[in-house]
Image (cartoon, rainbow, N blue to C red; front, side, top):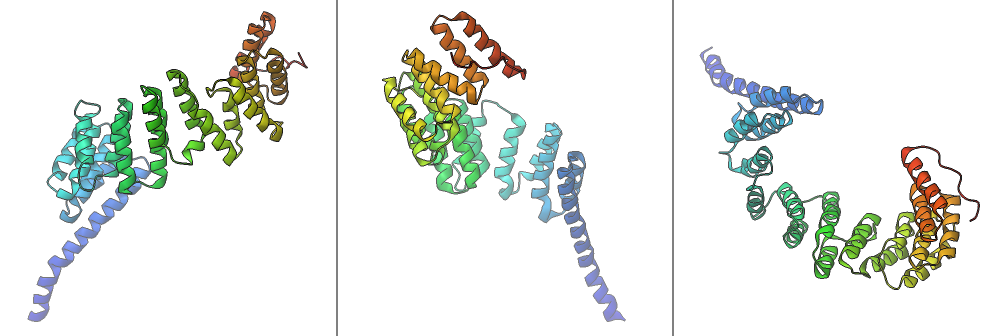
Length: 337
């Protein structure tokens, strides 16, 4: 009997500790479900309770801080972070969540740069830093951070690809000269991204702004050689290249392979109008409107009509473009003008 009592006295505290740990683990499980169901306040309370267990404390407190931020309660979030801060493994996450609490203050970039300079930087810090540098127009640091993210292999391929696409769209409109344009285009894109219509459009717009040409036209041609794409064909009318006849020849060669492409026909109409080939421009527009009478095609019709001195047709083109954008029915397309 004494042996049994002694065994119970030894076993009972351990068993109570195990039960307490199981309850705290259950709290974390329930908190996860609560967050997924859109109950951040309940999740926060459960995580606060889970944090009573020493082995679960830092992770539970960080998740509680996130739940508080979802409720727009920065004071509670900060209190959770202060409790988690003494744990070395939690410090990078504490700093990242602290940045969310402070918002866009003047210290944000310096804090992100400090996190990015650590031995094993958090992927979220690299993402946030690259985006912030791009927003501020600092293309060289943004490219360096992107390169660091690539070399770290810490980002999922889909996340890295999304970051590259974001930087293309945010940096190209800000590049100051041709050297920066080339560096950004080479530094942010891979082979797949260089074939995407959105990326080539951003490149073409940057070239137009800077009075440059050639890179977007070459990228477009390379992309179409790899694979035909209607959205890419449409870009023949947008990329800058002189003389226009070069683009016109390339586009007409494509038309022999894709004669029913409305995007390519519209691009050809724009190229002909740019070269003042009024008759060919109108012929291509007639073909375009017969296949796809879009608002963009009607706007091109209006601009062409203005340039050839036909105000009535110009007004009709603008009316139809507006009607289509409003979701209304346009007037019938011309049979052949």
